[in-house]
Amino acid sequence: MSMELKGKVVQILPLQSGMGKKGPWKKQEFVVETQSQYPKKVCLSIWGDKIDQFGVSVGDMLNVSVDLESREYQGRWYTEARAWKIEKSGQGQAVNQKDPIGDEPFIANPASADDLPF
Image 1 (spheres, rainbow, N blue to C red):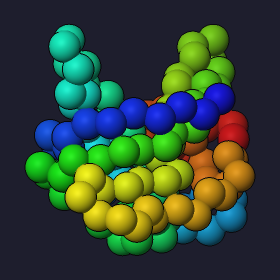
Image 2: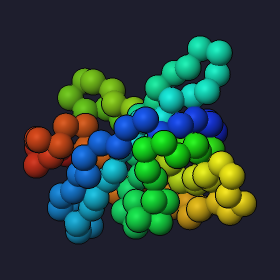
Image 3: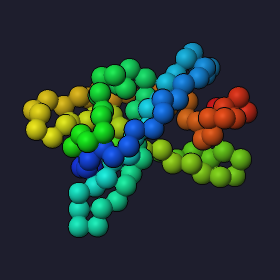
Image 4: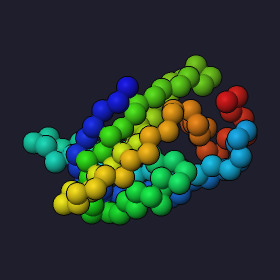
């Protein structure tokens, strides 16, 4: 499922990385606050080379295209909102390189990544 949202980056979370079946991976999560009458905060993720490519910073106004995906692990469901296209407001160019979902591992709890079956 794809969707788009617009908002301001209010927080960038620590970079996560690890080793998966396909080799090393890295993930950067950031929080966008929508600019609507009732603002919402949404945590989004960027994977791999897109982290440097998108260059997201606190205070940036963004238009973000997002893929939503949920996975089940030990009876619980985890949902991830993965950014695949980011356009910074006031700039005419979009940063876009959509990769198929599933290229990188989904980590529900990075502390116990070795226990995950996928």
